[in-house]
Image (cartoon, rainbow, N blue to C red; front, side):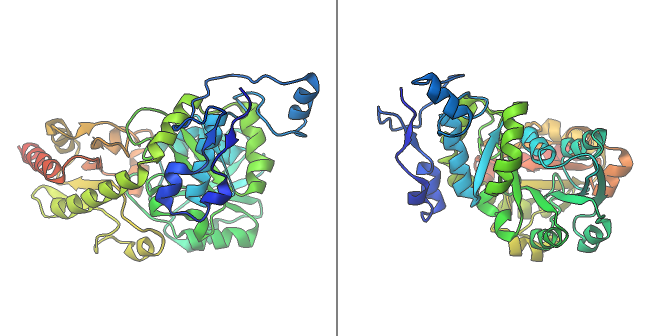
Length: 405
């Protein structure tokens, strides 16, 4: 089989609506002209001659060499994500954390300094606080909501700003435009973890960010099947920093997983829209129920950062931090009483899922660090799925009654 060729060149898709791009963008077809994107489960590729192999390895001739470097199925996934994000280039990785780690380490070196928002996923904090210092990379954690804190943390060797927005699990927001403007002024780059918002609700590059990372395991797959990650950015960043790092260190996505993600992207707009609608309804419903101290959701009028949410997001997402009256025992009774909603630390799934961040996703943080972030023992994180909204509301109500004893 020859190298697949594009039947939908990116130039034909650039000006189409996102829903159309998510069905057709980046498609490569073999000589068989298959309808569905092909799954190329291969490690290597055959060359017509030794001279051609030499040209491929010296980058004198385009083409595939080894699936750790690139693969036709993975190329399709990367191109479709590139179109969705509005980036110049994209590279897929084996997991979301591989995307975060690669995005940072491919660019930083000994003696560099990171400024990062303190409100982030526990594994991301491990990369910043534990892993990077092993290689002589310094860090400062700041209150990401306060632009003055970002400015005060800057040092002569600051090379990179990193943050999640909305942050896991409290939905704290960072003003992407303001932080990106500061980064450009000092010659640093901004890396944004955009997993909670998805590219449909927030496009960080449009607000000035340089690099965007995703755990494709979440909404992009959306059905709890495969692991994956994506890093998107400028052609210069991808070509001169990330591409070689991934090629040589090997955090490459499986072609099978990339194929699953491709098929999932076709329904991303429908899924995210429905999940946002249900999440907004449940946020308002839960806020008025006995046993609920507080609900956080970016489109509610009581959301502390609603002005920024309106500036940079087009929807509230499908994650609800819910603060129950009481502590860990109350939260556990609530979780154990749920019938439709399942206990799991994943999110973005078609199934509604719930977890207790203090004992799962953020358990490695000290009690003081969790308190600083607002992660209480009575907090649960609800990821709203595609079930009927009334069924979910009834399940939450009966669990709240059970939690109160």
